Length: 300
Image 1 (cartoon, rainbow, N blue to C red):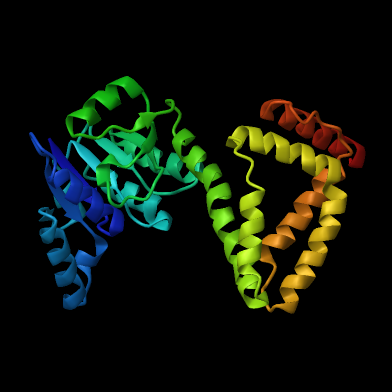
Image 2: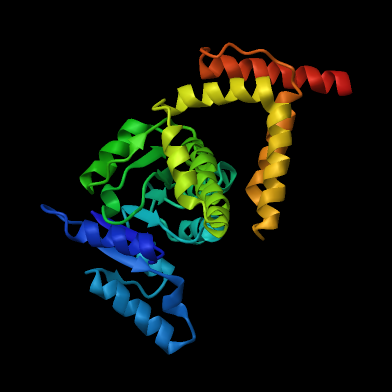
């Protein structure tokens, strides 16, 4: 089994290291990173040393890395994912698997897939669902590819076990992108809230109040509850959040997340819906979508 890594940043290093430490028949790994081709000798030398220290062979070019690979793992920056796929496709052996592990929109993954499939490779949309350290290739991942069972069997030989969520390219990345709305959004809200709380000298009190308000609900149940609260009280809550924005500005904290909250609360409250508090999330969203469509028809 021969594996090629395209990109050798944090993810590339973590995956290569964990694969190299795997027991049993370990795959032969080659890696190429654009820094290997740098005109700056210090940069190229440092990257070659980084690759070598992980027990991996540094490839002299993308063709050298990919040309004999059974599996290619792309871990470049998101803005270079489609370009990397187009470049790798030139040298990809027929039937090789191309695992795109970059955090990209599904449309980007579909563009990249076109390049790989046109050259006879099998494109696998992979979404890394947890920090890549310390588990490397064993980090929880989702995947989508044509004929998932066959692809999963091939990957298992190399010790790769993503959970397949379908055969449509972009499905795995859609799950990750939409999850990131919440995960990265909460991180941004945390910065906005607690920078202000520390400046105001009330961080401990705010944290204690948030602890007391934890519901213990699962995300689907919490989301349904949130939908009902916004449609029932969105207008009033938007007014409150405008006062929150004033509070933040007075503390010299830009209310970037709060401004978006005002818009969402206003829009949801303006639907004039009464949702059942205990209804399932899918039912809540269906009513909301119907109201939004009706609003479009009226405004049109």
